[in-house]
Length: 377
Picture 1 (tube, helix red, strand yellow):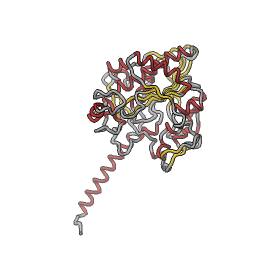
Picture 2 (cartoon, helix red, strand yellow):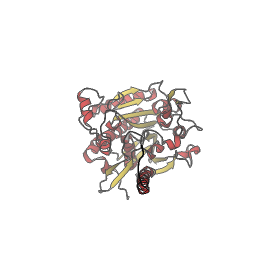
Picture 3 (cartoon, rainbow, N blue to C red):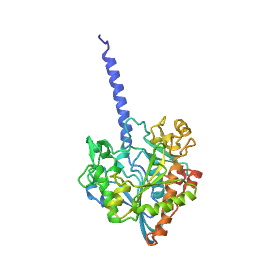
Picture 4 (cartoon, rainbow, N blue to C red):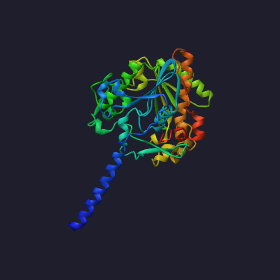
């Protein structure tokens, strides 16, 4: 069978293909622009390469923000963006970065932990490229959505099997691009392993007393609306869970599995002296039951399929048709503030006092954007 055509038709098809390619390339490169952060007064910006110089000049180098209070005390580390597809974790860290006033001790914040995951989106997931918020002055703040894994430009080719260097645990090869499977990291490993190594070195040298890794999980995942604590963190975590329950915030408390390696709640506790805490909120954009996946879903959590799943008893969180980012980020900020109160009670020389960070009630009342600094500040 012959297909008839003309040179003009061929040129038109070629022009169309080039136009589509140019549009795709423009959208792809738009994610290479760093997000804007407006740190609160008192924060100093550093780079992760200051703790591991092997990262200097590489895509794995990452901003680290430190604020020191006037009174001596302990040190607390907050990581957002371990998985860029879990935006409430990043936004909770950003709220601390842009609102916190530290009067005692030190606060260290890495808002986008896997910075290399923010330069692309996950194939076949139909995720949005960004999410936006309206600030109190009517302006707009936009943050990239990203992918769960490091951009394959930096992690290519992935091995068939990823063998965790410290334990020999075997995982699918793509998990080498998941920084929360790479701790404590190695200095001569892949970019993601080197980034994990840099964070471990920061913890070893700065000696945070308490360290948070902020996450989200699908509503059908058992470890959701939960705190996962290393055995060294368990007493502090149990006190905090009781306080949160008194506030009407239900929270599961899960022990860190000793045979699940490479994660913050296990490796930070085993390789450093910090008390590690991993927290999960429930986010429909993470789940397998979701329908249309867009910015609206990431911000509101509204999904008809999850309404049905909730009615059938298939979810591990209460679900009333929404799971807003204010609610999810507010669970994180309120939990961290409760942890800080209890840190001071258990260890009076390690207290860290922070003011100005909105809690769950304030975020739900005024909206997350209200607490973000104007872009032009």
